[in-house]
Picture 1: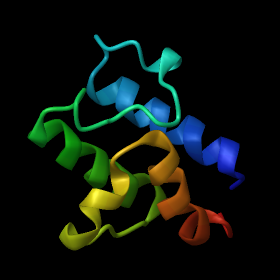
Picture 2: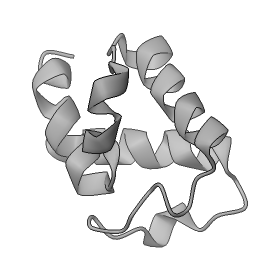
Picture 3: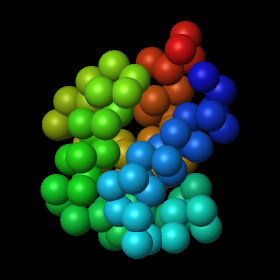
Picture 4: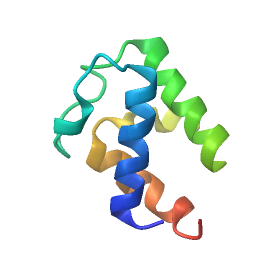
Length: 81
């Protein structure tokens, strides 16, 4: 997957989990944690595992703070998908 495809996949997951939020206008540096409740954030992590086979250990949750940091974190594991 390209970096753009990864970002789009994240936005799609966010839109499925919290459909009332305007994720289309999400900027790369916007905080996701400020827009997600704790359980919603965990749902995002679970969807990444379910859809893409990416395991995100709890100690790495801080690296999923923004759309940009999510793409940074996921770029290597998703590069071959």
